[in-house]
Length: 208
Image (cartoon, rainbow, N blue to C red; front, side):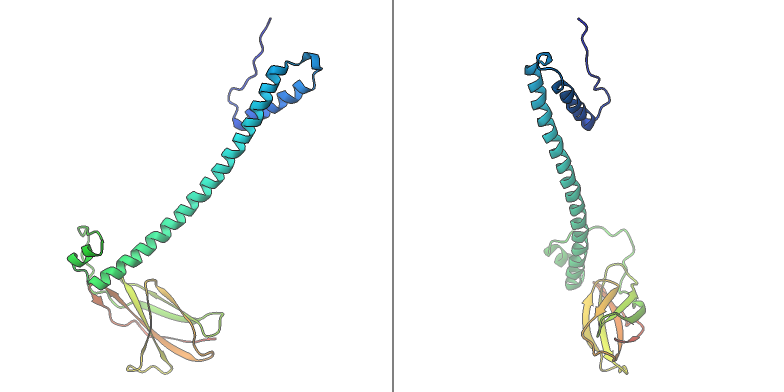
């Protein structure tokens, strides 16, 4: 008697399961007397288990892909937060090695020339936003790792009446809570472990 064997070669998981289902449909269509019930039921059980397992694998892959994306986003946020926290600690320790070690920061041998006291930020611009009483400030940094102090003054500016607005780490800042229709002036300076820069150029804006 000649033996027949199904060709599963080069078939992926989905194609193999499809072949199981196709064979089950064909066997169920045979007269009862031509069916091998023992092997038919075995195939039916394996087919059901394989389909359930395949569905679980697909679900796990989707969850894994989502979690990998979530981990990537969290690591990015963590790097930003770590840089901000580290910069803040360095500003408080003024870069003294023993104080840096005391707060748990690692010291590495410098591979570049120390930046020293930062130069004043450049190209400060101010513009209104779509919201009332708000303005967006943007500027260019002169060193990589530093914080920025933002000051403001009601129009017209006076050298002795500047007010502290906030300290930030990015090259932009959203001003809120100003009087609608009023004009304001702003300036920014940079700070790092070596000291503070001079003030940037002045920028004015009339908020909405």
